[in-house]
Length: 103
Image (cartoon, rainbow, N blue to C red; front, top):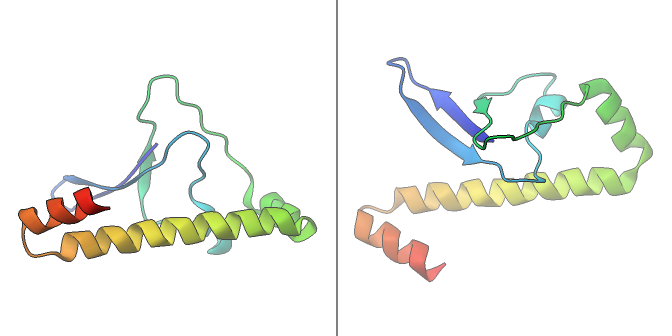
C-alpha cells in the first residue's frame, strides 16, 4: 500500500510504502481519525483489512502484548521516517547515494 500526499498542483509525493503484513494508520486511531495522508493499494490483488477504531483500542486495553506490538511498529516507522529525513537532508545526490549504499 502506498501512502502519499497530494500537493495543491495535483502532484503526489510518496510518504511511505507499506509491505505485506504491515499495518498503517495506527496513529489515526489514537488521534481520533486524523490521518494526514492518502493511501492506494499498489499491488494487484492486494487486500486491506479495516478495523473499527474504538474496538481496536478496547482490544489493546485488554491485551498488553498487542499494545506493545503496536508501539513497536510505530517506533520502527518513526525511525524509518527519521532516517529518510536525514537522508533527504544531505546536500547532493552523491552523498545520498553513498549513505544509502553504506546502510
